[in-house]
Structure formats: C-alpha cells, structure tokens
Length: 174
Image (cartoon, rainbow, N blue to C red; front, side, top):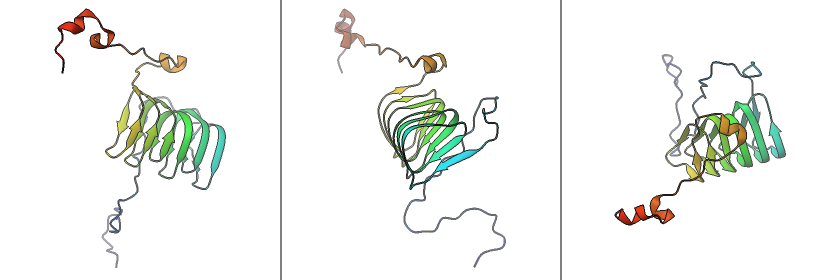
C-alpha cells in the first residue's frame, strides 16, 4: 500500500475539501533572541474560553475563544482556524486564520490567512492579506518604533478637493 521509496512528502486525501491552512513559520529578522530564550510555544485549544487580559513571554497559538486583551509584545501570536477572538492584539508577528474582532498591533508583520477574518485596524510595518481573507478596517504601516510606544496615529491628510481649496477647482473631475 505504501511505497517504501516515499520521500516523506505529506499527501492530502482527495475528499473535495480544501486542506486546512497552515501558516508558514514566522521568521524574525531581528538579531536579538527572544526574552525567554527558550523558543517555547503555548497552545490554547478549541474548548478553552478566556475572558480578561492575556500576557506572556513565549509564542502563542489560540484555537479557542478569547475576549479582552492579548499582549505578547516580543513574541509571535497565531490565531488558528477555530480561534474566535474579541480583543486587541499586541505581538511581534500576528497570523490570523480564525476570526478576530479588535485591532492588531505588530512590531514586524500581520498576516491574514485565506480563512482569516479581521474586523479592526492594523498597525504594522508589513502586512499580508491572502486571497479569500476578510478584512474590514484601516491600515497604518508605520516604520519606526516611536509611534508604537506612544500609540499615536498619523493624521489623515485631506486631498485638495475634499478640503475645498482653490486648487481643487483646477483639477479634472473623474
């Protein structure tokens, strides 16, 4: 039944359904190690429900329900396909394959997988939104760490037409 020469490649049974999304491993570009230094990771399973503030010093994968605030500033956060989150997220890297209602703040990257849904704002220097993902909110792709520390948002600049200036009168209307 199994070919002994198989190279160990994973095969997906042909059931007609799409295979579950598996996010790529997060690669940090920082030369410094994480504060825990152990490379440990924690998992919150699908039957777990948490209300309140969640903080930690290791990577975290959530497949359960969390309501409140999640803060892993120096670590990676993955919301699995079964994850249902109503919280603001703070982490180095954030991958969303489940549902999140709240803002996502990442020091390096936010990724929304094809099965992911985010209703909230993104603050991160890099974002990836896969084909089929759902996103409703604003994006602030800040480059410096100063605005992350203060939490300040950049002011939205109005176009001359919206501001009602004389310059808008000379512009062709589309």
